[in-house]
Image (cartoon, rainbow, N blue to C red; front, side, top):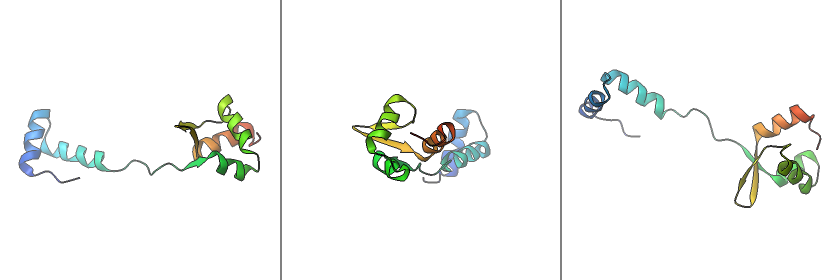
Length: 93
């Protein structure tokens, strides 16, 4: 992200009815990444980690017991969803 010039910052601040310092602070806050990329696992990776068949993981996804997201025809399960499932169900499929 380019750093705005002082003139551009002053003009934008005037339009938004804030001081240039407040606008600069807001821009710095917005440009900082809030979180890293989420780790997503495939059905095969989860099945291998839990030592179960892929169909077992698919059934858990389709029934809603295991949260996941479908991208086209492929399911992806976040690390947070795997941890939540393990905590709620004791990790048993």
